[in-house]
Image 1 (cartoon, rainbow, N blue to C red):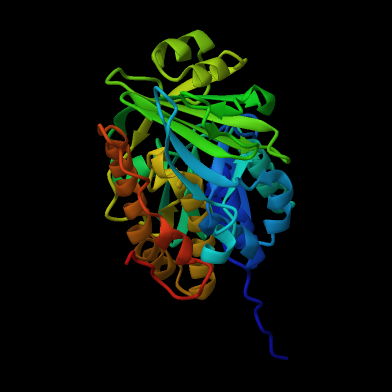
Image 2: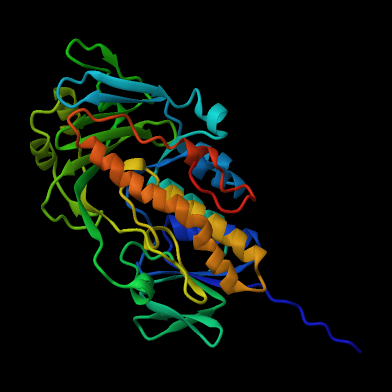
Length: 398
């Protein structure tokens, strides 16, 4: 009698259950991999802030079967406008909703971060999740990937993915533990009800702010970006960027106050300051990034999201890049199931031209914002048009 061995699915351990780690888990499970998640926090959750999901991110969520749920839990802004910091005069206005689907093949969405996180968590189904798992490193031992935790336990898998953030222990182990770069930018984050948003701004009220508008002020010491979030866009997310040489704690959860925010923006447009006066809960954090790494993978261990390529938020692509990472990595592992290490070499080769561009262009946008006459936003068209969902291999900017 002949016996035939059944090839088992590859096992992947993901360190970090943030948006990037969860997106990777969903993509891997859909391709038949066995996945386990490990999260250092004692509770699974995301901070209450907004984020932007560009057409490139929406396309990946569409491929994962999540677009309909996203549309039920996010908002599609009508347009994006920029006004001057002091008088509130219109600098430019560009349509979003009217052109994004036609021009880029998917909408531009804004979402409440916990809503996206919860959606991805539900999509992982019964994927095992270990909380309170503080990973201190991972390595390849005898052809097996092994993640080690602070409590002395370990986990074995065919692949370990370090999705453990900008201060990744796995990154430090394999690629150096130098401190992230303080970008000379900090920010406040807050949410206000939409009825606290001014309907008109400018010296004579000539700029109308419709419900559902994405708008922002830009000035000499920073910029303020506001966009609707929630199912019906009934809340306004505020990102209050501020240029400073003073070190600010990296955590997103440092409490601040409306008084501190208003004082930092003294002399700015009164309509903006009046909106700040309605803020109830406000937090601040320092913004950090890192120079692009030459490599993300070593043996059967690799990096994803902020662990691989932390970036400034000025192009609003951090979450999008992490979501793309998970999708591309799952695709490559499925393509190279018989040679995991080849897949992990191909992964940064495909991703790095794109994520390096985002990191460096985000810095460029920040520098542009500080100019006396700031130019419009860095053009992200190629990010939106070049869809990583396609089976075309590496993507590079035109």
